[in-house]
Each structure stands twice: as C-alpha cells, then as structure tokens.
Length: 298
Image 1 (cartoon, one colour):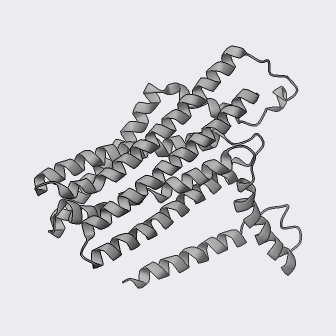
Image 2: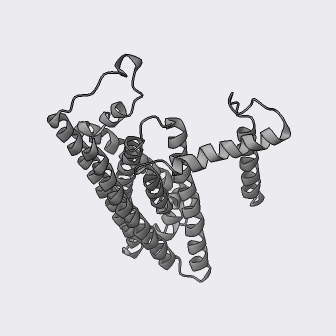
Image 3: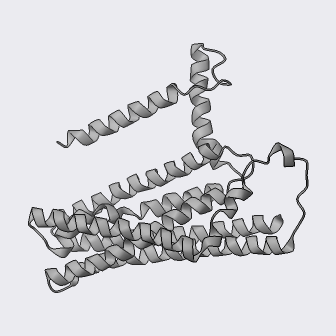
C-alpha cells in the first residue's frame, strides 16, 4: 500500500490548486479572459506567499523561526517506532497499547501546561491582540496620550512573553535530545516508566512552545495588515517545517536501521533535531529584540 502515499500527495496538490483557482475576489475577477485568469493565480500566489514575507518588523523572521523549530519536532512523530526500538516492546498489541498511553500523556501534558500558563502568567496574553485591532471610526481622529506606566507595563509583557518563548524552546530541545537515552536503560519496565516521564516533559514543552509561537507571531503583525493571510503564511511555514523534518528524520532512521544501528539512528536524529530547535531559540531571541525595539519606538 505504499502507493497511497504518492496518491495522497497528488490529491493534496490537486485540491490545493482547485482552491486557488476558485477563490472569488471582486478586484481580481473584473476581466475573465485567459490572460486575466493567469494574472489571478499570480496575484493569489503573491498575496499568499510573497507579501507576508515582506512585511515590516519581525514577522517574517518569526515565521522563519517557526519553520526551523518545526523541522526539529520530528521525534514526536516517531513515538510508535520508539516504543519498539527504544523501549524494546515487540508484541504488536502491547506496542499499540503503550503508544496510545504515551500519546494520551503527551497531549494531556500539552493541554495542562497551556491552562496553567494562563493562570500563572495572565498578563502575557490579550494585550497584543488589542494593540493590533483596526482603529474604530469613532476613535480614528483622537490621539493616544503617552502613558509611561502603560508603556513600561507593555514592555515588561513583551519581555516576559519572549523570554518564556525562548526558555520553552530550549527545554523542548533538551527533552528531544534525551529521548534516545531510554534505550540504554536496563529493562523494559524501567524504560517504559522513563518514557512516560519523557512524554510528560515533551508534551509540556511542545504545548508551551506552540502556544507561545501563536501569541508572539500575532503580536508582531504591523497595523493594517491582512491578519488572516499573514497567519495563514505562518501556518504554512509550520507545516512545511514539519513535513521536511519528518522526511529527513525518516531517511536517517531508515539508513541506520538498514545497517543494524537503530539506536545510533535515534541518537543522530534526536541530536540533530535538538540543535535545530536550539537554533530556532536563537532566532526567537533575535526576534524578541526587534519586538522590544518596536515597543520602545512607540
């Protein structure tokens, strides 16, 4: 059934092309000639991919950071193989059971961390949303008085938001690098319990990072921008990174397994993913400096 993968790719491309072709826009559908249809697709592609990448401020670099981070998320998509190769469970029923338990632990940890962060750091959310809303007509002509206290509080919020973002990213990379160590533990029971603990940490780090990415990229959008188009571009960067990361990680594991070095393959894959994630943390640090400059300039 390997042909299903190629069939899925072709169907996905066909559906995406049809979506682009049948999007209705009044300013682009004035002329229905063949030439105008070609221009329509060109304009749509430019609007979807080029314009968000040319926005002022730190949004394009934040999307690059999201893409790089997504490259390093490959280990979370190989949990089933890790249950077999790292923990050492060969029975298919038990393997599926343990994979289900680990997946549930992972997602529950991600959800709980998001909820806890909203209670512990309530000031990091919501403020950026209000700051980038379109100005209402009733208040368009009114000036905004400078308030040092409000400006200082906003700066502290930006600093805290990006600091948590960088710390969460570094923690995610550290947990990813530690995953293959489970394969060195003495027995299956110990390895299973250890992998449960790693699933808790891995899910917590993943949930924190992705919620931070959503919040931080939103806060970087300049006024008057097409928010839906820009955030769609950010989502595209995330999915592209996930796809490429999985592809490269799969090649590494396949080559190492074919030579009888499956554990070494996991060490190579997870170490490379950790370095990629740490590089995304460096990019996030640079974007945070840009965000602070924008706040200080107001």
